[in-house]
Image 1: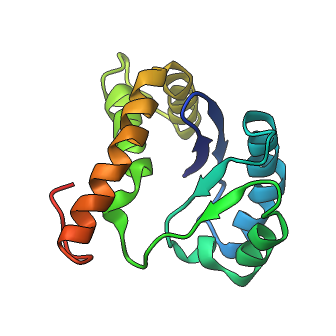
Image 2: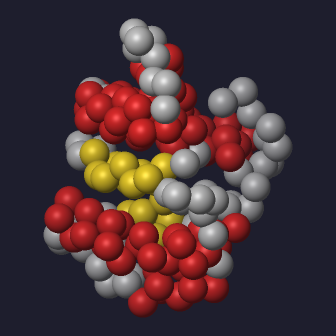
Length: 152
């Protein structure tokens, strides 16, 4: 399992997670990886961080940490149970598709991590920009169906 962060123009780190992500593990990632990425990419404090409502993301510790750092960047609060507007899934699909096309395919967990990191670095900026630009359409579609299922 990996954790990642990216923006309109920049790829952040792709972090290997040894085991399932828990609230405590997530809280250990935020200061070291998210905060440093946001402070470099959005040094003006105008960056906005998005995440879904996965249990580790909404843990007390993570919520408190994000509130304590609200002057460094804004935190976009996602509507409950709204995976339709999570562009992270699209990014992961692109990564997995690129890894599946590799020859030879990764054979060990370390090979897979290396392949994911290589493909992460090779993702074209336009891919991210297209996904970010699609957000208003995703939100509009979600609003039209009053939070129900959309085609996205």
